[in-house]
Every structure is written in C-alpha cells, then in structure tokens.
Length: 364
Image 1 (cartoon, rainbow, N blue to C red):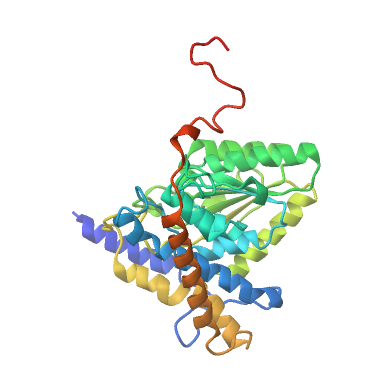
Image 2: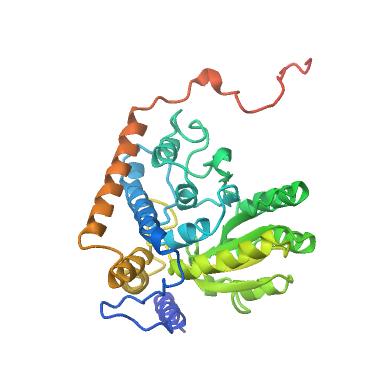
C-alpha cells in the first residue's frame, strides 16, 4: 500500500516531468522566451506592470495576518504574465471579468493600486466604495466588469457582455478568466457552448495554476488537457505557457483578431503557477517547497522577461532594480492611502442596491 506522502511525491515528480520545456534553458537556469515578435517599445512597460503586480501581491499577507485587511485574500504572485499578456493584447474598450483571484487582472486593466488596495481595506475610497473587498473589484469605466467568488461565474459575465457587444455591433471583445477548478464546473461549459453557438466575441482564458484550492489538477481531472476538453465544444482551443508573456500575448492577439472579425470565441489554457497558498494564512501541506523553488528558478515570468530584455540590451544595468524600487514605493503609497481613508458611511448602506426606492412595508 502506498502512503499519502509517497503519492504526493510521485505527483510532484510527474508535474516536473510534464512541464519540462522544449525551450533551451539559459545559463542561469531560466527557460528563455522569444520576444522578437513583440512591440519592442512597450516591453519595459510590460515588465513594470508585472513587477507592480508582484510587489502589490507580496505586500498583502502581513496586512491580512495583522488584521489591517479584513479576512484573507487570494494572491496571484507568479501569475503576472497571464494578466499582462492578455490585457496588452486587447483594445482599451474591451471588457474583462475575473474570478476570486483578481488583483493582477484589475491592475493590468488599469485600476490604480490605491483603488484596489483601499477596496481590500474596506474603505470608501476603494474601487467599489469599500463594499466589495478582495473578490468584488470593479471599474466599468475601464471595461473591468468585476470579479466575484462564484467559481466560473466571471466567464458568464464576460459571455453576457460579449452577447451585448455582438448585438450592438460596437467592436468590443470580451475576456472571461477562470481557474482550473472551474474546468470541472458545469456552468463554465454552458457559457463556452452558448458563446460558440452564437459566435460571440469572447476570449475564454483558463488560468491553470494546477491547484484547485489544495487539489492538484491530475487528481481531479482525466482525459487530457483542459484545452483538449474545450475542443469538443467546437471552438479553437490551445494550451500555452502561462509563464511566458510572449506566448500569452500571441495567443490573445490571434483570439482577438478572430473575435473581432466575427469568427466567434477562442479558448486559451494558460499553464501557470501561484507561489503563495490558495489564500493568505493557509497552511500548505499539499506541495513541497522544492516544487515552488523549481518554478521560481526556471519559469518565473518576471525574471524571464527581465532576462530577455537584458540579453537584447533593452534594459540597462540597474534599471530593473529601479523598477522594483519604484513599484515598491507605489504599493507603500497605496497602503498609506488606504490606512488614512475613511470607512463607508453606514447611512449609505442602501446606496447602489436598488435602482428604484424600496418601501419595506410593500406600499411603494
């Protein structure tokens, strides 16, 4: 009989074997990425966006454990290339909807660190007025149609927005993110099926960080990849390296062009990895530190882009350290802003709840 630790170790070994890349590793162990086809003048800004997300996410755990941020949050450290790679391939008016791990999507879409951080603190200056918290970020003015904690539901919001875009013929393309856990949720595939039947301008992005809370994907799913499952619904589907911003960007550009031309939805499975637990404060006993360090050493999305830019002379010596310092200062500013911001006025609790006035006696 095989005991549980042996099963876990065998699973982790298989994970590493499956994710051994065909890419040639560089001397420092990082797997190289090809950025030759990317807009060269924008790549340093992409790196800045990714570093800002990393600094933002890494600042959250002590804030939640100390009680300054109520409850816990879901960090996306390690998943930056998916958010930035997808959003950079979109047009400004395009729409994005996120699941319960949304900070990186929101920041990539243009929400300010102050607006996001203040929302996490539950302050009136937050993007939802302090009413939503970590899982309910939103800014319609930026085309960010929000995040929510229902597994797979963000895809339904994006699908609805895509239906509206098709009816209005306004050229918008919509992106719905969900995680690998959502790949085993029925509503996800109902949204995919409807979007395919109606040829909606929708990009379906499965952010596969390989753990649905604590469950490794190969323990909950058989029959090939998530992308292969999607093919059965009749739409183009592919799996990409979610730690390679160039691969994510290229796949999204193609998907957007198809959607804008009336070709219907595309499914992208981006294989990525979260460095932190499912939520802050989690006791992680379902994977090893060696596995996490393996991902950091060989596939860290920030370091892979940094390395490529330095190799091609697009990042001068010391510039990366300046970027990190600048991002850290911005995050610290967002913390100080949030701490000094007021909590929502209880008298406004009913605001934005109903469009028409409500009479609790039923006489209105």
